[in-house]
Length: 451
Image 1 (cartoon, rainbow, N blue to C red):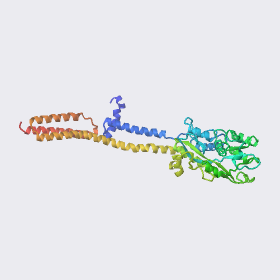
Image 2: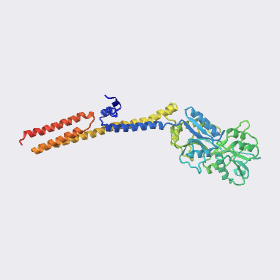
Image 3: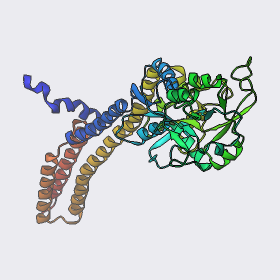
Image 4: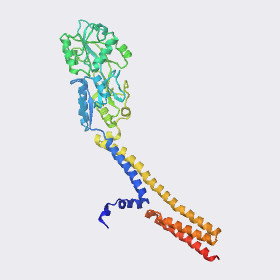
């Protein structure tokens, strides 16, 4: 055997040809189809792997949004996923980043009421994770009951891009207080706003968790000269502005000893949602919601145990992956195995099991189809032989017998040109034997009958 034949593709195909009973062309076709299916399965296995890094847009340094994002990062790191946190001015900037395909971001905290005027197609919600009440702190000799009483005063409403500013403007507008009027609206960050209030430079400040830290809000709650506004019209606000919820701050809940607040205080605010792009990997969706349960599922000052996360649908549709999670929790694999192991096993099941399901029928059907085609080619010549025998019986003239022998020679010549796999050798030689048998019949009849 020559050395160069070792790499001959025909030699490599021969075992397959003989095993399946296929010609070289049919074997090549089967190999190409099977190869394409296998390559697609391999591609899908790697393509469907969850990324090991996701990007979250959060809030300013020290804000509740930023603090929660850092807790998420710690939980995800336990599962081998890195959470990259981008600081922002708050909910509105988070939403703008998510809605802009040019910005590399996967998820973000967004409070209700931010979607107006934004292109939110392609965004979904993983559910609400907390209430985000608006706290209005003010300095005044007597308690103020209505927001309209703040007209003509100096108010700090939060920086551009924060949910605090957007919510404050919506509430003030409902009371006839709009930018450009006699009321001075200051765009101050949380720290500067708190200092301005205690220093007497502004009369009131609006604060929310997307914008301010818990320490700043607690400090103002404990400052004797600062009052917390009680939204006595909270029920009416929530009916007029549907993305707002009423939340009660119980008497003494901030400080029992000093009885702060001295009475139940009604607050209003939206819920905060985890908003994601539609192409967020399902495994990461489950991982984030699992982290949300750990971060937000405990009882708190303004919520009951297990109240969040919750599939509360407001401006963004709940993603199908999140809906499945809320109904049935994590899948068996992700409950039983480490995240990356479960991901690999799941991808094997998704990519290679369907491949096998498709490949087995293909490998069974194509050989049968080819065998059917070969039999048709062989049976075609049997029909010719039968026709020759019939003509021999009814037309025994010498010139007819000579013509029949010519037809047999043509049949034999065409049969000898047929290219068949070795697995059809028995049928091939039987056909050739039958050609000789018919020829002998023609010659026998010719010799037994006078000219």
